[in-house]
Image 1 (cartoon, rainbow, N blue to C red):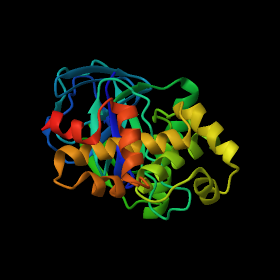
Image 2 (spheres, one colour):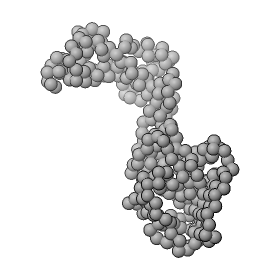
Image 3 (cartoon, one colour):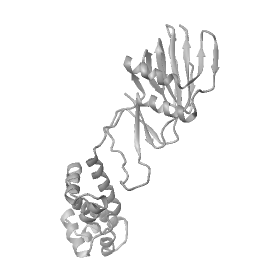
Image 4 (cartoon, rainbow, N blue to C red):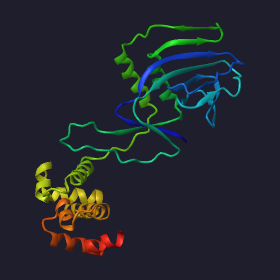
Length: 294
């Protein structure tokens, strides 16, 4: 199975949709680098499509998403009357293809942040709907159709969309929801632990304490510790120390800052305490570590 993964926002957006009626003996045309994703849904009949190095024989209730940056074509003529719906969509955001579906840790922003929360929308390039799904899917899809290709009548028609652009986008996202592979949702404690870890990673150089972290997130310190240990297997204080040590190690081998400066820069209260903790974690003093790595 192959998937396309969209980093959002921005979300993929609707361009245009239509349907096509093929006679026995008709074949899908060849197109290269069309610049939009082309979603095909077979209502009845069949369709032979090659997209890049993948070959498909699509039948009733099959969905296929063709890539915007490859060449696709019909590699065989259909043997029966065939009707399919097609939909073009694109994104101005990042996307990538993968051959396996991996559970990915969503990028979570801090609870008090006003920044966008980045997520991943994963769509399989091929999917077969159940009969129950296909009925609902087709109902949504039909609302978007404004173009028609009829091989029997040898004509193409284009009508004005019945829905507003905003309504089209709303229905389009509903269409994608039938296909999307959903990431399992994290519970509130898991999300809290992730936000705490991100907060520590962003503020390790300041005077952080368990109490200040608990006050920032407005939770009891015991609850903070419990969430962190369950999600990451580590207490907030241990996480803070490890993050400080890892950043100190980078500075020791990539900068000419003195050890005292590095100690202060990564948040240790005194150089002597920094030396003690650094040796506990690495087996070397900061000076020995720098000499060993350079």
